[in-house]
Length: 385
Ligand SMILES: Cc1ncc(COP(=O)(O)O)c(C=O)c1O
Image (cartoon, rainbow, N blue to C red; front, side, top):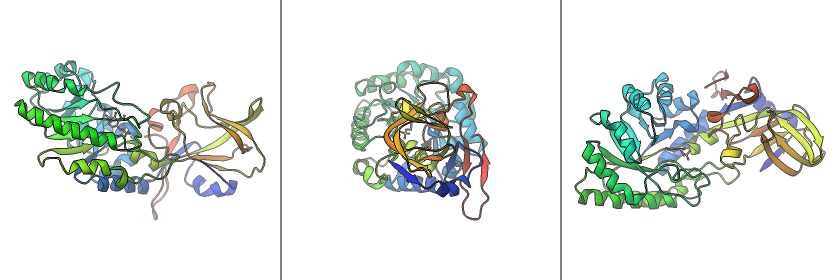
């Protein structure tokens, strides 16, 4: 989806930033998404997945709403601690960790960890008296384009034997968790997986193993990108139906990343070069797949775009990023305005897995980040997290 707008109407965006490319963080959108998802999942404790976007003002916005945090490393723990967020509000959900990483996380005061195999259990033995562990299971959503249950997650049929080994080694596994895949089209797999986990809880009780007290339904809640705005209330309806069958002593957690971070940022870029080639006009932007747009390659994403130009001429065109690599291509269009140098291109819903994975390839810096000031506040510019 592309909006073509007059060049001068880019001014309100350009007034927000000091340079292009810049990601503009909107705390009001972040807050609204967080609260909408909280409302759609009553009784569920949300842990924001820091990996999707660790920008400081975003973390602070979620902290101010009373949110908790899902971390994948002690570096993420430190980022949160620097913002005054206590480790008691964090869970460490990476299923595969080095021993040094576990030691650092425990030393920081994080006590919840995740395993999905017995070899990972051995690493946790030294800390067994102070930690709680969740067992990650594999459930693949057929409607989620980004799979997260192939690389991680024990098959359900292995769950009881892993729980048995944990019991024998004195490790307290009192939780189950899963991630059905990112950007799921429906919550049907979340709901089915939760039902399966509740059945497993009964088998755990029958076997006399320690009771399961927590089930973490992971991430996978979608951002809208090219489609309709996501209505979290209807998306989460299948999960809510199962929540009514959850026993009182079982706490439910979720780890949303993309659904919160993607809509919270827009990327403002500029045309820095153009050339007429065999296959049409090529427009080179100052951000590409080595910057904030790696999702085009990693996740097959397409982003909603607004172009600000006074051009009336149309032609086939190719968008490309600023690096020398030919893979740094951003999209082809059979008919598009022939953009001019310095025309502005804005990509929307650009907060998830964008800056978090941006590189310095070719010595080109990732986009700057600015926070959109609330009314009455002064606009601030930031170049890093
Ligand atoms: C363990 C874990 N939790 C949560 C998330 C966030 O997922 P999403 O952005 O789909 O909500 C991820 C994404 O990779 C993850 O690996």
